[in-house]
Length: 173
Image (cartoon, rainbow, N blue to C red):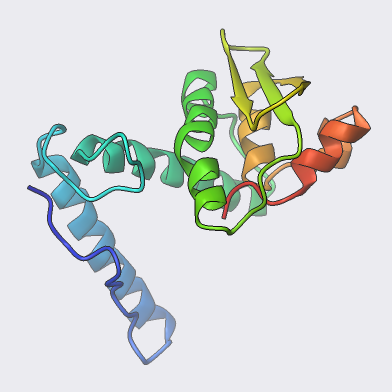
């Protein structure tokens, strides 16, 4: 069983020098990799998802977290590599199924006043966020994922003014 207190967070060292922070980060990242690689996917674990209380949740979550932050770093250097469409689409589904509903449930964001139907042009299927009459938004899975995580500008990627307004608000932390 993967145990731990979800409210405990390892505190970075008080000394904020670069080498100390780097060592602290490497130590904790290495521990996370060790735990994830040595734990069975079906092992019970505390998660953010009411429907999935297994270690697999964290394996998936960490892949998406890593992909997004790798994109951030590459983008900061002006050299972002494209994301795999299937992986990006799985990230969209994670936002739909876990992240957005949790944000609403915790009162961190207001529910969307209309549904947004996300259609990936490079994958099959669709995802709907919210309830009611839907506004359709089509783009590559990567662009849709980056829109959901505020890494793409809705003014550039969303032509419909109503959809642009919905995508401009907070949907994810």
